[in-house]
Image (cartoon, rainbow over all chains, first blue to last red; front, side, top):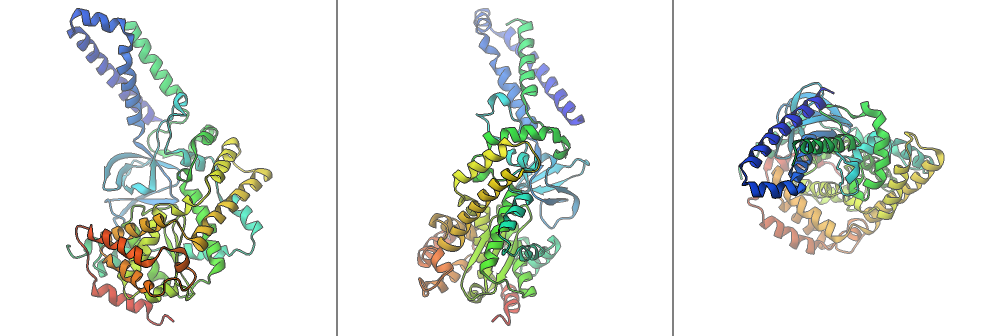
Length: 198
Length: 297
């Protein structure tokens, strides 16, 4: 949990900074306006919004891997060298966003790139506002909880439909090309970045 | 405002925010390390998941596996290993340049050993094309565009959109009400029935009636886009469709599940014209395509 403490400390230091600004701002106002502001306690609302925005921004930087597994790559391209592997349910810190790729930091501290389609943002959910706020991570949470249409449901379906041939589906899943094979294919066919300038 | 009030407000807001967060994962780590929090996730699932867009990647994969099994119960799979590897190479390369290059278990392609002209895509990235369709392709540009069209269906989750929403809501409610990691027999039975119904919804569209026309046009537009991104001549799509015009309305498969080819050509040509630049056919690709399909009967 060192990360939560770091973020909490960062939030507090920003709060203290803005509190100071608040006093400077208040001190510079003409007395009559100050009095009006004091009477209207709603004036503290900016603090509320600031806090909500702050916490949301901080927490939006965490991503959940939603696919079986993927490589954390040295560069934002599929056939770049693999630095680490992350799998479904792992969380990574998002550092940068570039043309559909995220620069991330893994639990092991390795920094590299994953494609945005491999992950979903892990956003904070407020119970008080649950009906108003939808979170993108909900499906990932359900998967985490072992729920949903899963292996157990498939087994139940297969028991009722024994004529279906899942062996062929498993065989289909074995057709898997490595990124370096695809890179060689692109090069030979003058495709992608190896193509002719258009 | 008194100093004390400001602090009280800050403290209250902090408590509300930090205490009110039902599930906060911080930094990099493993979600399953917080098993204790899974219950709260399940509790809220019933209020959060509502439509096809809330189906998780893993669930989409399990739906796709069964749809693929249903497709393979109707069509024989080709045993031509080298041709299947070639299909997977072209398809995977195109998928890299799509809007959704990563799915739960990746994209997989299979040739169906039938002369019927058809191409089908199951959710999650299980994509099939028939021998009859491949025979109509003259080059890799045409094949790349057909596969790009099918990848477009997966990218836009057209298969999942075919599932009746009432079915999904029923499933999400059932899932949301349980906190158990494994289903009880009654619960499992209900879920299997919903799963069965969802598969029927998808195969009815995919194999029998066809997707809505707007989804086909959308997949065509995506095919042009993905082809242009990777460097295939997007005219490969219209060239293929041209081969279908003369046979319109003459058979099962593609002819009964897709809108009129002439209409699609008109629209696709419009999309091609809107491209900033258009890649051209490349001899190296056409040669390797000829090599790959040599001996195809």
